[in-house]
Length: 116
Image (cartoon, rainbow, N blue to C red; front, side):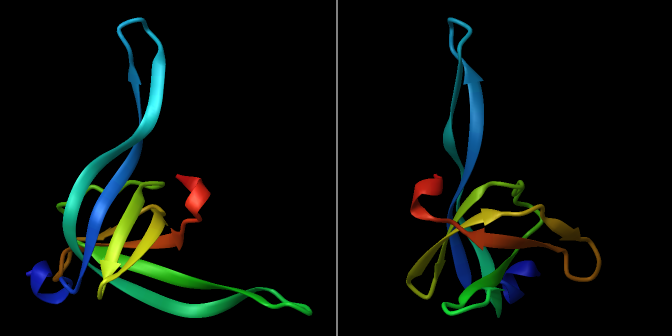
């Protein structure tokens, strides 16, 4: 049922920062793709002022709605395609709903190029 409502956009990749141990006992940390091509809906919220003064600064708020079948974790990096435009976000902690329309809502923040 979720797919009928929230399949307008696609999370092309979900990247997670993982740690693994080598055969020598060293810990190696890196980004691993854990999901690809996940149907979702990206919603843009209001434009908020973050700083006022001579040069005003603002920030958009975004939310992603996705099926509960996908295990998105806080700090995962999401590459989202909405209408042919790609966005890169960092996930906050998901809120899962289990009532009539099971889904999860994830508030996300835009990622600067040098963050991943």
